[in-house]
Length: 346
Ligand SMILES: *Cc1c(COP(=O)(O)O)cnc(C)c1O
Image 1 (cartoon, rainbow, N blue to C red):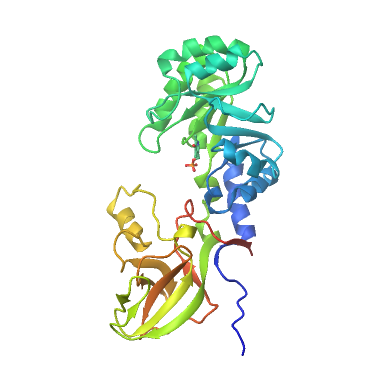
Image 2 (tube, helix red, strand yellow):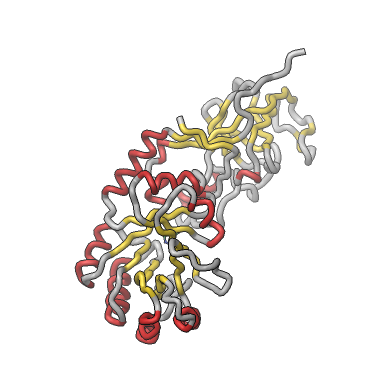
């Protein structure tokens, strides 16, 4: 008896290395003071790959989201590591390469009182209202900086609205309280330059999405077809014994909830076009018959039932030629929630 031998068995992110790196280099070249951001699932590429890219582009600093992400980048990058989430008491023991972001006045007082001249970034509260010291309290904050090794002010702006004007105003307030570099998020390179000129301070710009995901034609998700079965209309299939919607094929594809497939982050979809995209990429909650993100024969096919942990059941109608076991098919994913089994650089 001969079994089926599959070269690849799961889900992949295929990356055209030369194209992807060219895109990164174009953004890096146009962004003085760039601080690459590597957090979460590494924007689909994994934290280690992003740390390697940061080394390759010659940046002196990388930013990670949480303390848990320090170790995965530390091996592949030997510059400074900024942690974006606010410092708290459980921050790991002092490492001269790791720069915490201090976002509360009480924390700043505690670090200053420790007398270790810790290197710190200090976050200014913006209209995001997420973290940071209120602008009215920055003079008090400045009083603590003599006892610390101050690396600069952090200003993280919302994605919409008048980010640049707000950043300029806050940068002025902060640098009047105490001069220092400005670490900005979500302004353009040109806006950062203007803020630097107006305040007379160096600026750093933290970038993730635009840097890693800026050349979307250079990477893509694929899944392997694990099994194909002929089914008749009304035949019951799957965990939930749903009726097949017609004559055709039931295709078992690698990729399910464990890979972040057919999951959507809660709606950043502000427009109808974005909402339509969310539906097209297969929102699990919509129904058991939602359009799946798997493309077969040039179109997205319906789920027969909601995806499982590691595989999905999709229906291919009789008029469409079914794929073969071992075929690799395209999948539409959201890169910040996708956890492929393998990242393959072609
Ligand atoms: C995640 C994050 C960034 C990077 O955001 P992108 O939109 O992915 O570029 C920048 N600054 C801060 C503070 C962040 O948390």
